[in-house]
Image (cartoon, rainbow, N blue to C red; front, side, top):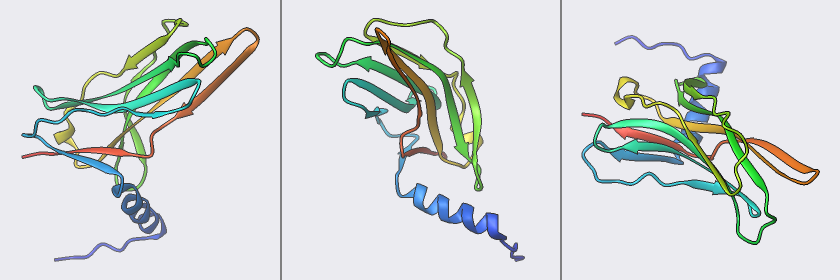
Length: 154
């Protein structure tokens, strides 16, 4: 067996993968599991998940933004949702959804098309751009949960 020499980027990638691996949700393909939203924010709640379609064994990135009741009555939108995978060195975008359906009064939801997670042996993550506004006050944030999802394939 030959060993491949790992350079500085490989070592850094391995350290990132090890740290990232501690927060990976692993789902066996035969299990009955539910995709859980990871959320952030108080007045405007930003949420994201890698959604598992159990019947088709596929993944898709989903993101939503919600104006929290009693939180300020903001208009909200979510755009530019990306499903990413870690290829051992860096995050690579697998699918993108440019959702430009405009501002919503309470909640907006967007998602990418599905992929077969067994095609790659890496973990997956999601990142999206969230926007909110009220009167002259507005904000925008591109956010990704500090978490990865992986499917154990047969």
